[in-house]
Every structure is written in C-alpha cells, then in structure tokens.
Length: 208
Image (cartoon, rainbow, N blue to C red; front, side):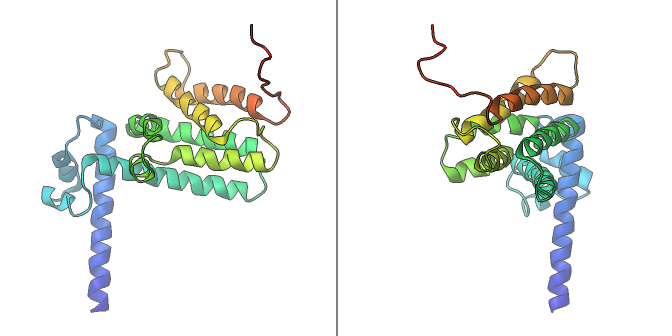
C-alpha cells in the first residue's frame, strides 16, 4: 500500500512539473495573454481537465513559476551571504541576478511589475499575488542596516520600493543598452546613495 501511495504521489508530482514546464515554454513563445490553458495542456500532453487538479487558473501557474524562480535565486544569494559577503555586495548581486532572471524569463515581468500594486492590500491577499522579490530585497537591506552598512535614517521598505521601481522604469526604457546593463548602472547609483556615511536628509535644509 505504501508503495502505491508513493507511486501515486510521484506521478502527481511529475504531472505538475510537466504542466509548469509546458506553461513556461508557452508563455515564453506566445506570451502570457495569448496562451490558453488548452495550449498549456496540449504542450504537456495531458487532458485539459487534469489542469484543475493542480492549479486554479493560468495566473496561478504564472505565480508558481515566478515563486519557484525567486526561491532558487534566494537560496543562491543566501549561500553567498553565509560567507560574510558585505550587504552592499549582496544587494548588488541580488539586483543583477534578478535582472538576469527577468531577462531570461520575460513572461514573469508583468507579474514582477505589478507586485508593488499589492503592497497596500491585506497580507494574505498581497502574499497570494506577489512572487516575493520585494521581500528578498527587504531582507538584505535590513541586514545591511543592522550591520551598519546602510544608512538607517531611511525606512527599509522605502529603499526596497526604490529598487523595485528601477525594474519598472527599465522595462519601458528606450535607451540602447541591454536590460541587465541598464539595471546594473541604476543600482550602482542607488547603492552609492544608501551606503552608510553618504549623507543624511535634514528637514529644513536644501529647500528653497
């Protein structure tokens, strides 16, 4: 009986992975909006009805793909952090890796860009709609503030929001440089501004 249950679980896992792989391929070639559930299941060589055994909607599949990619990236970045990498270097690595990830999986870009729109919603709704990249930035920035590497006169979530906005502006940029290079240069400027000792904003100063 245990072997039958194990086999059933393995088959379910394999079917789910086939759907995710097929969806990623279809989203990449046809675009998210132009891909139907029928397209995904045909590419996975599974019946359309099987889809709903694993996912609620096409959006659910997209969010799962994005979260899986983010978790893989987070694991790599945290491994680097364990060898006492400085927080500025860690944040730079996170931004560069995220840019590469988005550049190679453009189907998650709309989901990534919409994440900031959910930040003011109840936590359970926000978590269900966000792939979690902003939370990853938050962790690294907070780490840097606690270690005295980043200025602490600016709230963590403000800095994180600024980083997130870099991807939004770059997505619509008309400059003749690559997406990844565009991100790298903007992050370089931002890092110079948030490092400890780079100046503090004083109310009443610098105002006309």
